[in-house]
Length: 240
Image (cartoon, rainbow, N blue to C red; front, side):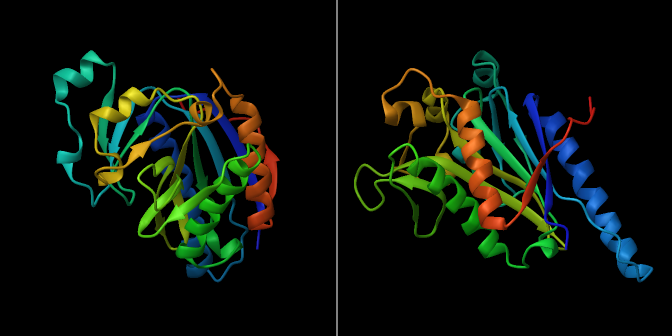
């Protein structure tokens, strides 16, 4: 069981290019697992954790409803945004500047074989991080992700999640609003949930901006603790 996780901070990257890169890493791990089983080998499978910040983009999960995107192609162009239908779970999500997007590409057989536990650990990572900023974040029953003021008329989502897994290998992940432009959320029904608002860390703290690097460090600290992993800072691979 390899509990080392290679961290790659991709900086600001196009969504489709990053998606293709995820697929590349995902396939490498799957191919290695298949080789191990076919040839009765025990070659170590790698794990990755990608950080990225995307230009404005809306993505729709495989079970999502296209009607939850409230604007047409002309409006997308006007607001400098793109749209993709993708192969993760969940409904519609927005990514953009000021948002920390994390893509753990893990072989869960290195950790535990439980997708429900995996999602709960990702949520817990965010909950523990926000607690360091004095915020009481929570899960909302039946609604994946991380929320504030759950069970009140002021419930609002601060982190969205959606993953894909095959043969216990994961991809896609979470999107935490840190300094996000919340106006872009007005063009969709977030995660297909009507009547719920969205927030960002800088808004909750009443600050013009929060250090993205500081938040990343806190996320990684809690990720390592929860998964009992060793996060290795590796040079970013060239994929463009």
